[in-house]
Amino acid sequence: MRSREPWRLPAGQSRAVPFLQAAVLFAALCIFARSAALVLAAFLAAPVPAAQTLLHLGQQAVESRAAESSAESAAEAASVPPEQETAAPVQTGVERYFVSLQPDEARPADAGTVTEQQFGQGSGEKYIPCGAGSIKNNPRQTAADVAAEAAQPLPFAIEKDSAAPQVLIMHTHATETYRLNQGLWYPADSTGRSTDLAVNMAAVGAEMARVLNEAGVNTLQDTTLHDYPSYTGSYGRSNATVRRYLEEYPSIKIVLDVHRDAIERDGDRIAPVAQVGEEQVAQVMLICGCDNGGNLPDYPQNLRFAAVWEAAMEGAYPGLTRPVLFDYRYYNQDLTTGSLLIEVGGHGNTLEEALAAGRLAAKGLAAALGA
Image (tube, rainbow, N blue to C red; front, side, top):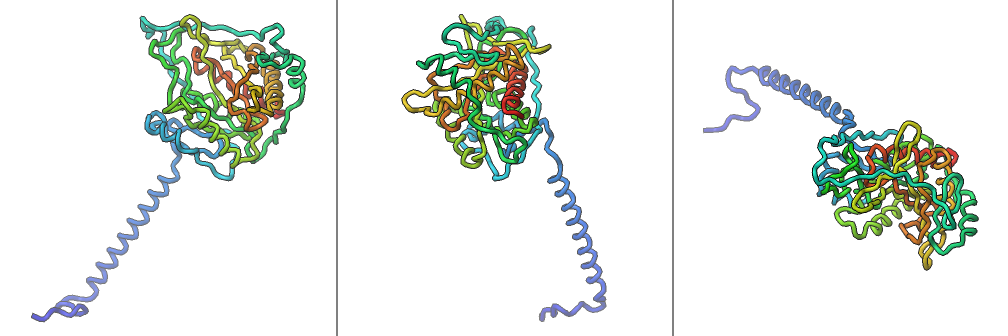
């Protein structure tokens, strides 16, 4: 049987019928495509809920909180450098953290005790006055030499309202965290560590960065977990991170490594606290390294920076600071002439006390920088 020619219609069938069918099908496809495009556009334009995000100040990647609480994602975050772009516009928004504390009634029988203590400025030959604050001189430097350096102006100048980053906040021990219960106790199994950026040092660093950015000091924050999954080698990994930022943003003058302390006495965890106005806040302590065999040849510049910041904080908020610890430490402080480590409270403080302290410390820094 000979096949029908493709262009020839069966007997009695009009050519208009398949033409109309094709036209209807084409119209339906157009309507479907337009609807799909509108749905896709709406999805892409929809904002991410703030409760599910962490804003990394500067040009950082936005990570979901679910990923941050995952051990595998945290390990990956520690090994992969943060995403960066050449442009670094100032960002003033940051998520605020409100943590539900365990009630005092939940205290277990084997809980440890937390003791609150306000540390004074100290006195004697090892303490050099620094405005309302002081510097504890542990190295073999004469008090006269330390005092002379502390009296010098800042070794750098910050450009206010600059589009280029001026400050980097990072965390060598990002997983350090605080007391998460209301009463003066802590669970016996508490490690004082967490990969959750909402309760560890990243939360305090974010608050400090927010204050500085709002004051016109362009500040970036890196939230890499340098101490996870391995604590050993944390400073080597944070050194590499800081070097990457300095290469990408040579405008950075200040690098702040934000930690919290861990003070214990006879099994008690000590919470360094101060009353500032109506608010109880954690005390803060700056740590400035001293050259030891050529590892920090430019340490006097860092010491000047520590002295200016200490004086500004303690002058504005009496009791907020503990004496600057000037000692034979390293802490990657050879990378800039504005590199310092700051301890914001300790593992006996609550997160809210630490956030308040970070806020005041950043205000003091902004004032010291003339912002």
